Image (cartoon, rainbow, N blue to C red):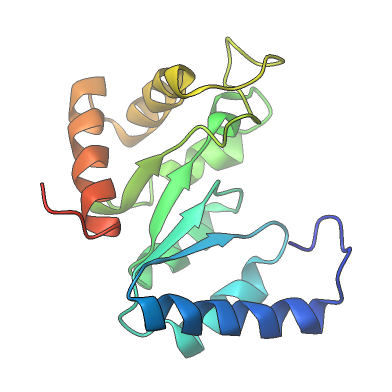
Length: 160
């Protein structure tokens, strides 16, 4: 997370590599919080991810970032930010994510979607995020709900 820059970037990069190694050791997907650090994160994932599952949590990058993560086989999860009127570039990114890599999330208690913006976020509000993602992905809400359920199960290696 380079947004706040509370930690030296070289230490953040080293910690990220260790975090990927830990995920591999416990055979779980690596869940990545990346803010204003997409170039470095992509370079590290290219070098260390291999066949490890990967979820880009609360995606905030560009269309190009989304395409690059998808090319690495990452799942890309959209939060309530995608519903904000100032987030057109994020909505544009939805279109380049393959359907089998799309996820939606709340990031509770933060980032409540429109029309709940300004309130404490909660799981019930994810429906608004999903509606926005479905529109941008040119899918029905029901198609997106079924697809993101399959994707979440696959991402976390849960037998359905």
